Image 1 (cartoon, rainbow, N blue to C red):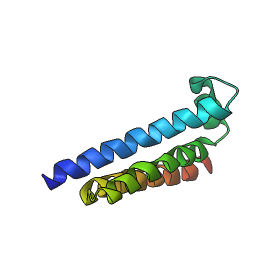
Image 2 (image 1 turned 180 degrees about the vertical axis):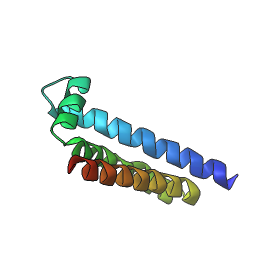
Image 3 (image 1 turned 90 degrees about the vertical axis):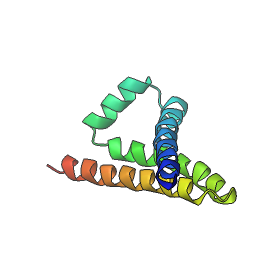
Length: 96
């Protein structure tokens, strides 16, 4: 039961990051979604976009805490940490 709650929180965290990324690109980019991602990858800015998308994880994290769904909030936190690790690897890879 606990693993299921953490998994639900993790999936919500990943979806929240993807949703935040999509919202940021559609609101602030003059190009379409795929073109913006391609330009960000070419210009080594993909990590920046991911970090801006991960900001949206604050919302489900604090909602789960307020509802006393601690394990789901842990899942969102785990998803955020995995996104942060991915950002680190993307940043390191851009230095090569």
